[in-house]
Amino acid sequence: MSNTTPTPPPMPSFPPPEPAPKKSRTNVVIIGAAAAVIAAVVATGIVVVNSMDDSGSRPAAAAKSNAPAKHTATAAAEEPDATPTYSEIDANSFTIKLRTTKRQCFGSAGCNLTVEPNLTYLGDSEDIDPDAVYEITYEIHGDESGPVIETAELSDQTSLNYTPSLISTGSASTKVSVEITDVTGQAS
Image 1 (cartoon, rainbow, N blue to C red):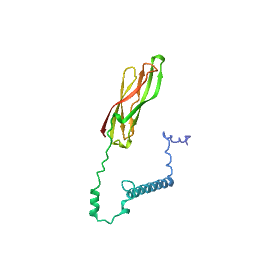
Image 2 (image 1 turned 30 degrees about the vertical axis):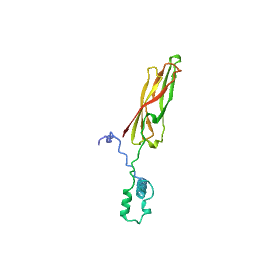
Image 3 (image 1 turned 45 degrees about the vertical axis):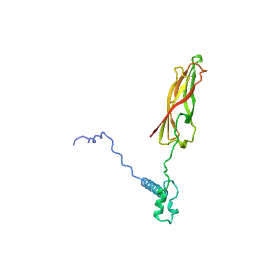
Image 4 (image 1 turned 120 degrees about the vertical axis):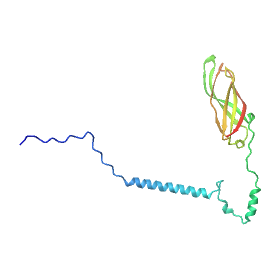
């Protein structure tokens, strides 16, 4: 008989894998319900779109005419050209003022100002071509180095894009003014 005790096998160098979690039926139910809601929304959208014409009103089928088709085609041909006309836009179409957004004065040494254009169109904005982009050039007077020329861009009839201007005046009493020098339009 030998006095040897059996040695246990060595431990593995990595932990045993964790058991896979049980999948819940709740996820399947939630996904199925979400798919049903999405399908209902899409179907409703298709029905609504098909029941409206381009102007968003009820279909013209409700107002059917008993006139012969030949008469209907003639009436459609007699309609005037629906191409909209827009106003000619130039420097006199706007007024401009400067809005000071930042001011830092240094006693008798003058001031640093950040200014932005405040444009007003003198007509009805519906008269502006919505597909055109207008470059509005303006000149700021009062900077100690001379006039500052900037350009703002008007698009979509009312969207104005510009970069604020940083100017330095010779004294705190210097009057800053602005005038529009040019407007050019280009179809987008």
